[in-house]
Length: 524
Image 1: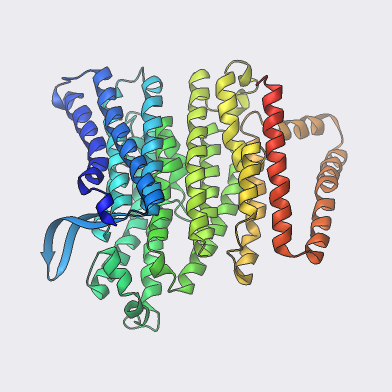
Image 2: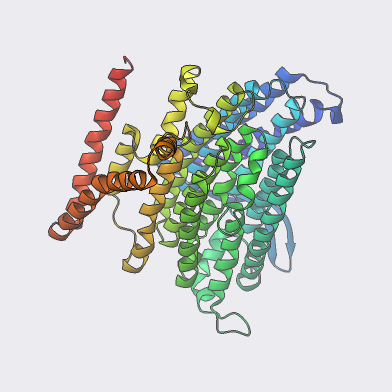
């Protein structure tokens, strides 16, 4: 059905942002003689990304409604000993969804940047970088072979290095971008080893041809050991994903990368670069399904990341770091889903998280600008009185991730109806996700003014510590223990599927009620 998707149309998707990046980066900077001004630079780059978004949306419509597919080689770069190095596109439902996510978030970031970087001397250079980043990400998600995937993978890493260290006169920014660069090289070393093993034993870099040899690869042992070759390949590939998607212990670069301008945080750390690892594992899922060891490894790493980052997020005071640790925790949940072979759940979470987290970062950027670049959330009490629109929009993000607002109740209703993707063994680790979600709820709740902590702290200042601790403990017990006990009893006496359906109904009703109540209180 590839005839419904045109090769020239698909080629225009990554090339449009590249054209905008080259024009703004060459002719809009000192390097090219500053021939074009700020207005023309942002117009050209936004136009390039807008074209890419429109074409991506049309592609998604064709894929979703018409069942269109595309998998062709467009250009053969060279052939070495029978190993073809090609440029080609593979467009299916996963690719089409990622194309829309990348281009839409990038478009919003481009528009947002006009105001945010208004006073910065590197205005044109910044627009060139973010357009180049969009091109690199599109080449990564649209590739049909491992060589092009690796090109996009490294290009994304290079441009992120330039963006994190955009303010190159700031020592902390230089440290942060060097840290991001070095940590990602550790992950990339594992990634290229995995690609090398595939090239050596499968004799091809094309996805379809590699997946066609899965049975052959699954029966081979790694030379000199009794390890399965496919397990070594999958773990090497996942080490690359650990670097890019900031999984423990290669997560250390992401919180420090907040030193770059806020639009970068939204683009890199919410929707695109950090999700590249999740996308890659989902794309290579036919290989990962052959190795239970690799899947268990992914599951454990994801669970550790989700919980550990939840703890660290609680103690942060920098507004961007709070959101960054939330991102790390959510990436951990996506990785857990991948390890449980629930690829559709992971990708669904990736898509919803991309939009909500980009919203959070852009909201945080507006607050930072309003606070004259003060990022300490302890100074941000009562900001909603002065920035009501930012407050309303920023509220949607954390509430969606906390399952509190109507939007999230409705999303949770859909979640409870998803069939169980975990087997008994994996379910033990999945239970940690509940605890992790509680932590995320706590520290995202604190993003505004740390109300809960402040209340307890003030109480402790004037009352006996015994009373405060007892009071808070009893309060939590009164709220939670009955619910847990009742839930346990109900679960024993009712089929799990029925419980899921009742929970879905409750969440849906609460969601609608919450939305209606919020609308009435706001005068809608």
